[in-house]
Image (cartoon, rainbow, N blue to C red; front, side, top):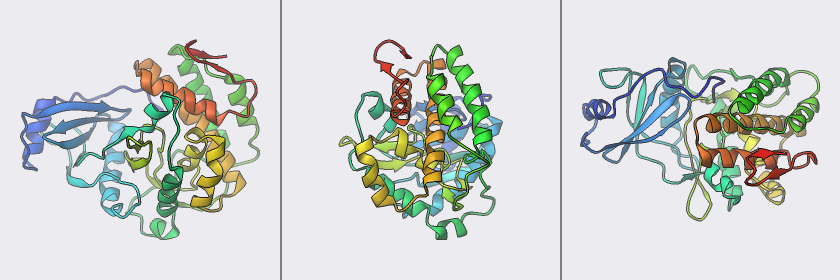
Length: 315
């Protein structure tokens, strides 16, 4: 997740993009539809194949990083996109792009937005434990950066929280500012020390997919993958789980230093705040509902935070 507004810089014509993909894969370019758009990318479906193309220059190195990483993830316990083709800008495709079979499932954001909980969160824990094995960091593709967003640095995070609080207010979302500031005040000193592992890097609730039984089945959007302490990836421990689910998650994942979990909680709060602000600004009601629920779970021990359903705000 970047710190920039949810706004494309490049126009992608779906018909032209489908024709361009047809130069690389045996697909019918007449069968094209828009699937989704995020901060940095547009996703089209062309004859059953997903086509993801960068729509902002900021995303170009992220898509190229994903191009290098995805072929190495086939043995993860949860599904990740498997590239069928990838490439650089060309007529019809104005940014770097990847084509892959879709990973089936709905976003965890939608599940949380309905007030539901994951079934078998231990499956997600086991997948993260596998991703975070030291051997994967040692074998990371060339050019994998070292935590460019400084997720474990409370000073860097504080500025982001203040900025996204302002954006949330501008978008009509009234976030629990006092509780957020208290959470930030709990951090002391400099960046949290921890093992440097290969992380997804942007494991917010739109990137975790679940099946009809509410079980985690896939993880998408790997452009922010990097070498870092597992702070950002373990944010799901806070925003995605209920308190009674967390011990089982940790039992499946393995030992985690308390400082890493505390930093993960701060990142979870920021992630949900930013997602709430961006989804409200772009009128994505289902994502906004999930972000609200995720932030409520993250800050649940804060007595000042009471979300009034239907009131459109935290009180």
